[in-house]
Amino acid sequence: MAHFITFDTETQVFHLRNASISYLLSVEEGGLLSHLYFGSRIENYHGQRKYPRIDRGFQVIYQIV
Image (cartoon, rainbow, N blue to C red; front, side, top):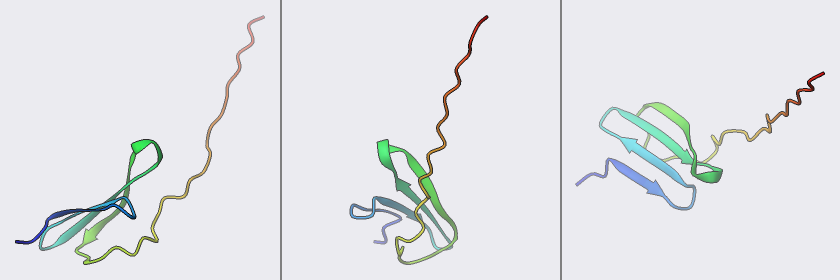
């Protein structure tokens, strides 16, 4: 029986697939899921499409006068 949902513990990637498509999701820091790929079915994931981690944090300080 074919496995339609697999999870690679080394790369922390879920691979959901059917006969036509593949959908890859990665588990990021803090347990957040990030989209890696959706499209034509692929057999194996190479692990090179990680989402770039960029600090986009900011702090807003309001001063009431």
